[in-house]
Image (cartoon, rainbow, N blue to C red; front, side, top):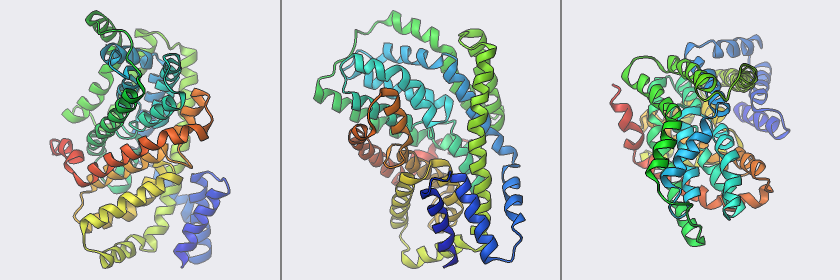
Length: 425
């Protein structure tokens, strides 16, 4: 009964409009104050100890690197390169959105940043080329969800910390599910474009491909440096994040020269604000997890689930439904951080790898970025495109269905997420 009050107070505070971080912290404080003999100072101790973790340095560094890449001219060069490759196909601009978002996701690690960076360029261009405006917004919003999946991923870092997994392993584990989402989104986009007769632009020109590649090569090298360094063991995931920041600043300032020291300070200031938001969520989730651990919620939930069914397939179906519903109301980072300590013991009982569990959880909560009522990517794309959100939502529904099919495939074919990490052992 007491735990129901904890979750009810958490959801109730969120419903009143309180930020997720404050809702978790306040509900944890109230629970400890009312139902335990533990000092309320424990809440403060848990929040401080929660962020005092070397591994967590990767998150603010990746946030900072993503902000520098977004402002440093990388996104428009990626778009030009992708346009030279696939722009001439039927639905060429739609394919460009998908491919460019995949490239940018491999640098930023953020769904919102990916949507904003590529959407700001491609949504107006798709309008000018006669594409349906709501389709353009829906496609861009959906393509943005590659950010938390294709490494580097901020959400994967947070899951790794909470589930006691290697950050490098979890980052690599997101590649397979990420490209599955790219495939599902791209195929649906091509089918819709063919049905509506939206043709490509121009024709294939190898000289343009080469010129745009030379212009974008510094941008394309970014994920190779990050993932190559982690995969080869040259540096850890945290060190890779720091290298990405230095590289992004260098390229923006001295190669593309679209950053100056004034804009650099402004960009770093925005990244610091985003980091503060993430770290508040991390800190408050640690207090929330302390309460869950003290009340043995994970053990109780595992015993209940095992009594209910011994089937691994049923557990995976339950996992998909739970995470999809959670993603509708809670952002990916807090959802993963709150539920990982509860679901990890369950997964182990059913023989599900914790690496695979993380891939499924992040994949499902990413779909929540385009699912009402939260759907932050939808709101971002609608704002960029100047469209009312109630018009964008129906256009997004086919993409929700397509990515959910991708999620089911990822869930029941674990090698999609485990194949690449297996080479790191």
